Amino acid sequence: MTTTAAPIGRFPIPEINDLPEDIRQRILAVQEKSGFVPNVFLVLAHRPDEFRAFFAYHDALMDKPGNLTKAEREMIVVATSNANQCQYCVVAHGAILRIRAKNPLIADQVAINYRKADITPRQKAMLDFAMKVSTQAYAVGEDDFATLQEHGFEQEDIWDIAAIAAFFGMSNRLANVTNMRPNDEFFSLGR
Image (spheres, helix red, strand yellow):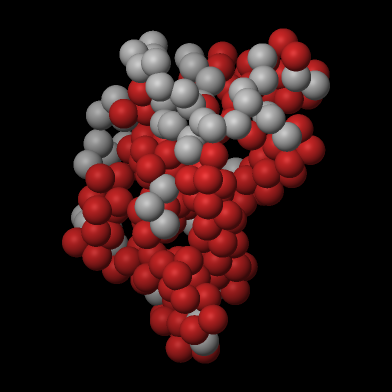
């Protein structure tokens, strides 16, 4: 239940029934599963081709099997989104992180200062690298790979960490430019 009358973004928000069928079905499926439509779906639906490309890459990164857990993937999003000052992604992915980690405190800890969060040394190394990719990708070097490998990350894991940080850097910028507002529902999920 949304309690605010503030707009969810600064660009036109299409009516769900006016969207192409594939996008409409995806949004309705998310609504069925979560009980509400996350505003990111509505804001990005303004540009259907980009909506499809965005969510295809999102799903390829966030829903794949691998050595990173779904909670760890969300940790990357929350930490880097905080660095990019993206309120939407910190709040929305913070909710997902709380649910996936089954921990009501972890998202707030990671968002505020992951270095002091109740995470493993492996996860701290992962987030150190993700933050470097997010804020200083030009400085990534062999030492970063060696550190991650010491923590058990393989080449494909390192690619995943970098790709998630990079993809959500773009997402953070779009969310900030569009003035995407987090759904009120996100604030209480997983608490």
